[in-house]
Length: 195
Picture 1 (cartoon, helix red, strand yellow):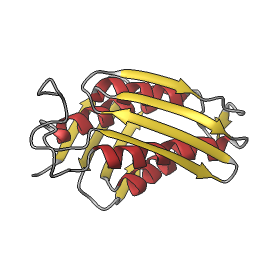
Picture 2 (picture 1 turned 60 degrees about the horizontal axis):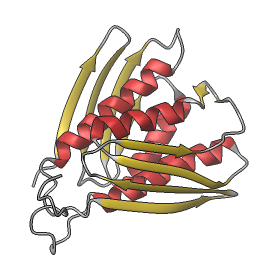
Picture 3 (picture 1 turned 30 degrees about the vertical axis):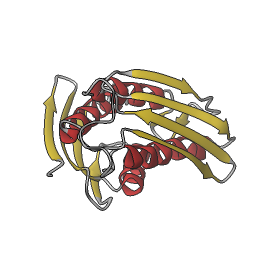
């Protein structure tokens, strides 16, 4: 099954072209104009084994909000589209990821029903030009555009860079688990018969 998709999204605030392959090797080519955000998305791709190509031109002269939120919306839409009918996928994924002193938990359900729970306190307001409050907005956008129940919790951490990067890696690992095929699942993993 081909689980690839290409999404283009253009507004007065951003112009985005994104392609993903859910059955890739974790390769990426990412340009958003926000250095730390590019680094985070490359980490997500590497640890989820999702191939990701992304080019975003955003109104960074305003701030990073529109770029980061719209990338979240576009990535979530692409994941949903590439998953198709979700037949034979494991549906659930979770990971507890250590990154130096930081320890991050990510748990998700590709249920088709969006819900987002974020329990993280970041010590700093910025990492480079990246506004740290946008971590929450990014994952909210992914949750709702994918139709994903997503929980992110910080169990320990002091360094903002470590915490945020740990979140993106934990999300990648949890998503990798949830989108994997399981031969025991003949249709979808739901008593309702659909996701």
